Length: 103
Image 1 (cartoon, rainbow, N blue to C red):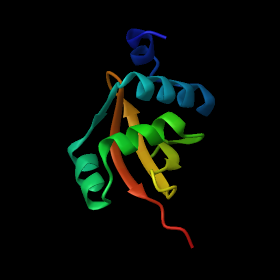
Image 2: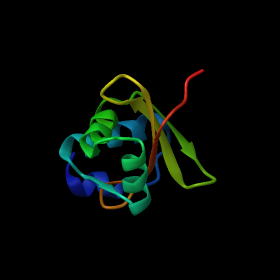
Image 3: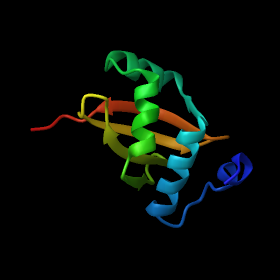
């Protein structure tokens, strides 16, 4: 899949199609971060590459219509649960990121 093809896929019909595009974008390095996401990464002690790696390996995503973002669940380098909210803007734009609390 080319960069142009990835960027043209914005309205996905299902999560599996979105997940494939997320993997493709992340593996190609087409990931950008909003200012908010950069602040949350620092607060959570996450390296940007750690977030990209989580996107490369994630196995689940769900559409959040109230935010217009995809919620992606993955793991950080230590195996902790990581949640990334993203959208597609000339690649993947990470909107926010946080470690999910486990009980």
